Image: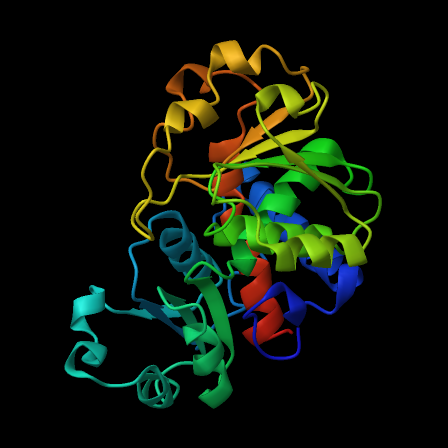
Length: 313
């Protein structure tokens, strides 16, 4: 990455993605080593020493915000955070651009989430410090896709040749959009899309996958997804983003009965939070890796921060 991480396009190819994953691995290994000898400051503990990271979250967030804040703390930095979106002067009519022009004078980097698709891009266009996209509208969520692919890489020992089914709201699902963009850096990938009518994967992403060598298949039901697919990536029917009637979440629910159809190598992933599309009766199934996936957000986001503003960059 040159300066910002707004979309997956800011990652300069597969080699750069792999370097982030290797760095995340090293961060995890270093922390495990230090904890094993009862010391709790890893070799990365001063990477963000004297650095401050502003957290501009204009939408609710649990995993993304907490994992970024944890990452800053573990790297020895400090965070500047709004107590809520209503505490920002944007509620008084201030533009995103003016907010960022101000905040960049207080911080070494800005982590931003916003409901508008282009808000983070606009922020990066005026910022003199790195801007990291923590989720923008229905368009992009690059740090989520990095931790998703990192999780697949850890559990499958590879990315090339994998097959992944994406389920749920594929039209508004920013996590799936960034995921297929990142997977496009790899070879021999197969993606199966299963979504309610009207919420299918946008053509622009299907066309992009085709150009980059990903084979994309639209599925009408669960039975169209191969039994030996490497991962089922479920997402919410995002009712807070649009009005949708007639969609039954249970039609897309992964429960113990439905999961029994798939192989023992089929992972169940989800960016969380979940609603009715992911049953709690599979939580103890070893194939259910969504909480492990969420926890991988910390080393991956640490790696991103190290890359962009680390003292030993």
